[in-house]
Each structure stands twice: as C-alpha cells, then as structure tokens.
Image (tube, rainbow, N blue to C red; front, side, top):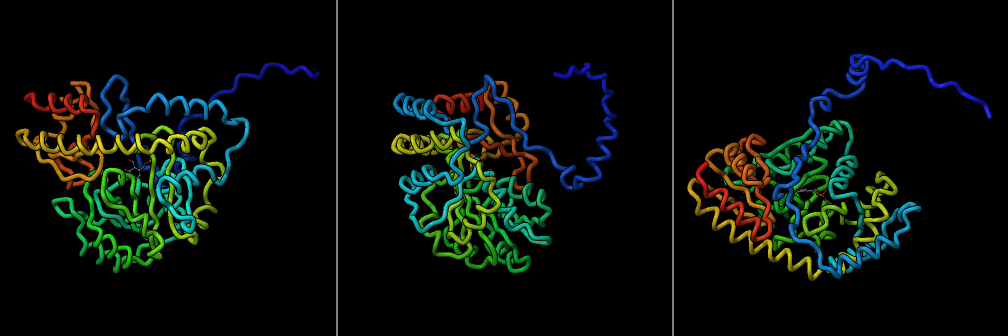
Length: 372
Ligand SMILES: Cc1ncc(COP(=O)(O)O)c(C=O)c1O
C-alpha cells in the first residue's frame, strides 16, 4: 500500500475568473433569466401551487407503503415505464394505438417537446398570460417565442392567434386547457381551429383537466398536429412527479429518442399504478374541489372591490384593489397564495388562489374580509 501525504492547501480560484468563463460560454438570454421561484411554505396554508389539499385514505397509504417496500431500488427503473403506461391506459381510457411518453413531471414533457422542435430559427407560440415555462423553455433552447395576448376578459383572441400562426408558422403552439394562471377554459371550437391551422405541433396541456369538462385526449389521433400533455400533479400526486404525452406514435417515437432513458424513477413507477387504482377517491376529491371552487367564486365576488374570473381549474384568479397589500395580509394570516401582479399587464392587481379544503378556504375568506 502506498502512503500519500495529506494534500497541500489549495487556494480557491477568484470568483471573477469563474464569472468570466460563465460569460464566455452561457448565452446572454440564459444569464438574464431567473430560476423558477418556489416559495417556502412551512407553517403556512399552502394555496400557491394548485396541489390537491386532500391526503390519501389509510388503505391507499398501506398499499403504497407495500409497493415502496418491494421496490428494487438497487436497479435502474424500467426505461419504458410499461406498468405505469398500462395503468394510465386502463384508468384514463387511452387506447393501445395511442403513443405514450412518460416524464418526470409534465414539466419534463414540456422540455422534451421544446427540444424536439429546436431547429435554429424555429418559433414557439402561446397565448399570454399562460404557463411561464412555455416562454422560459423556448428561450433556453434559443427559439423565437411569440406571445399572443388574451382579450381583456382573459378569453382567447382567436383571430389574433390564427393571424399570428399564419404569420410566424410556429413549429410548436402551446394551449393550456384550462389555462394557468387565468383558469380560463378556451372554447373547443377555437382549439380545433388552431389545431387545424398550425403547421407543426399543437401541445394541448391538460394539467387541470380533472376540474374541467373538456379533454382533447379522446380525439388525439384525429389531428396530425395534436399532442396532449397531462400530469398527475393536480389530482393528488404532485410529489411523485409523473407527467405524460399522448399522441400518434409517430410523435411519441421521436420524443422517446431524446428522453433520458431512466427519467421516471423506481419509486414513482412502483407507487403510481397503486394510486391510479384509487381513481374513485381521486375523482371524489376533484369533485369536492369543484364544489369549493363554486362556493369560493361566489363568496370572493361578494367582497368589496374583488373581481373573480371564471375558472375551470382548481384555482381562482381574482383582481383586487392592491394585490401586494392583499397578498401580504394573507401572508400575515398564515396563507400563501401566488401574487401574479406584474407578470403580465393583463394580470395587473391579480392574485391566484388554489382551492383548498373547506377550512383552508374559510381562512382565506376570513382574512380577506378584514380591512387591509
Ligand atoms: C399548465 C401547466 N402545465 C404543466 C405544469 C407542470 O406540472 P408538473 O410538472 O407538476 O406535472 C403546470 C404546473 O403548475 C401547469 O400549470
């Protein structure tokens, strides 16, 4: 055995030297970006991220514990995620002729779709305001992003969308159905016009489908441009990180080529089929959230100075006289919501409030009924 002497103290290089290298190789657009802010919610009622506030039943938890106990974490996961896909097909009514790709959350699916179309000079188009990741990803892959403003009432400006599609020939169009952060449900006829007019991919992001009456998934093979993106995050499994794309296999075969081979981990693959078997419980929870959404919309609209926008999702966008002050008042009452004031001119004065349990929602109403 050779003896080595302790290493001599090494001086750290100067910060400026690293900064110079970062500047040399990282594009200015990326250097100008900010990491997606995730607020700490310890000790607060968490109504900022559209999670399901209800837990699992004792039975579901016991089954999940057994699945985790038996998971082979010494092995890489199944690269194809076959059991998860079979469970999705069975519980979500997805036919065997539809291609599926799994992601580590649907945000990974959004990244893969952007990467898929990332030819130099390609355009990505979305209505705005919408999910912020659409723009961030386009910028990260050095693509041109075209945002088409919604109408003042936050409805889709279909004529502007069709004109922008004809003008910019986007490789990828994003449509969040229902839309985040507005909660708006775009008309199916308008979605179909866009899906038909677009020359490339139209990704219909159905993150909030459980709270709306509308889905394009049953017709995903009827349009050559259509890719439907979904997530389990909003129906009670945000922590397991599973999203998926459903489309004609010609699309999913291409997406699979750029997907990291083991992107969905062993524990997620073990737990998801178990949880999907409890679809009845998840559906009851979604129904409770829809009922609470209706109650909250009515009660919030009755507050002085508050405008509530119609929502088909598990959150409400409201406009208040002073978003910063109202956000702070909620914070002081121990409630975390999303202050979207300043994100886009159409969101001026707006807060986005996730629908919680009845008790959590009552806490919101109580805090907002006090004068700010
Ligand atoms: C419209 C939309 N798509 C996708 C996502 C990403 O969800 P996840 O990565 O949890 O699947 C979100 C998250 O809020 C969203 O609002």
